[in-house]
Image 1 (tube, rainbow, N blue to C red):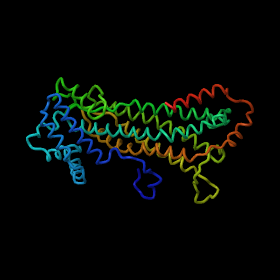
Image 2: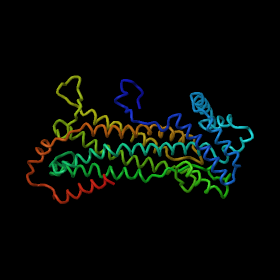
Image 3: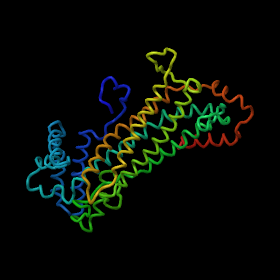
Image 4: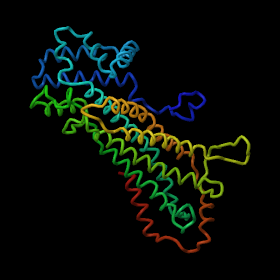
Length: 380
C-alpha cells in the first residue's frame, strides 16, 4: 500500500499480519532445508548423522539484519534469495557435512514452498475475519428480513422484495466463495534443477509426500515448476470472494446515496465546500481496498505462465504480486468488516420507496426459505 503517514490510518489496519516479511520468508527457507534433510535421511538418501547436523546448523542461523542484508546483496547479483541462505547454513555446519545440504533440490523448490506456507497462513487469517463478528452482524440484520424494500434492475426501481431477499443474494454467494477457501490445497515443491527429481529416482514421490507432511503442506502429485495451477487455484478462489465483496459494496454505495437513503453510516464524510454533505467514505474506502487487490490479481494472472522449464521474468513477477496480495487481501477483508460495523439500515426509507407498488410483494414462504438457508450456511 502507499507508504505515507497522512494515509496510514486510511489505508491500513493494525490487525494485518505480514506472512511474507523478510524474517518469516527466510525462516521458511531455513525450515525447508531442515525438513528436507530429515526426510531424506528417513529414506536413506543422506546419513542420519548429517541430517541431524544440518538441523542443528539451521537452528544456529540468526535471521537478523545482517542476514537480510546478505540475502539482499546476493539476490541483486543472482536473482534469487536462496544462495545466501544456503551459505549461512554452511557457515554453521562442519565442512564434512556440506555435500549433504540442499541435495537434489533447487532454489525454486524452496521459494515456491515458502510462498505456499505464506499463502496457507494468509488464508487462515483471511477466513478468521469472516467468522465471529461478521456472522453476528449478518444474523442481526436477518432479524429485519421481513422489512419491505425495492429490488432494482439496471439501477431503476423494479418490484418490492423483502430485505431478507437482498441479504440472501449478498451473503449466500459470499459464504459459498469463502467455503472454497477451505478446500484449497497448498502443495510443497520438490523438483530439482529442471523439475524431474532425477537425484531421487524412484524415491522422489515418497520423499515429496514425506516433505509435504513434515511442513504441514499438501502433495500436488507432480512437480509444478512450470505448471502454476496450484497458485492460480488459490488466486482464483480469492478473486471470486473479492468480486462478491465488490458487488455488495457497489450496492451499498448506491443505497447510501442521499436520494435513496436506505443506508446510513455512523461516521461523517465531510466536504470542504458543501456542509450539507455526508459522503460514504468508509464504503468507498472498502471498495478501493477490494479493487486494489483485484487489480493485483489481474496483473498477476497476465504473467501466470512460465516459458521453458523456468521463467525468471514471470517467476519474479509472481513473487512481487504474492507479496503485495498478502497485505492487500487482508486489508480488503478488514475494510469490508469495518464498514459493516458502521452501517445503519433505514426501514422508513425502504418502505417509502416500496409503498407505491401496493401489494406486489413476494411470496413470504419462499422468502422464509431463503432466509433459513442463509442462516444455515452461516452456521456451518
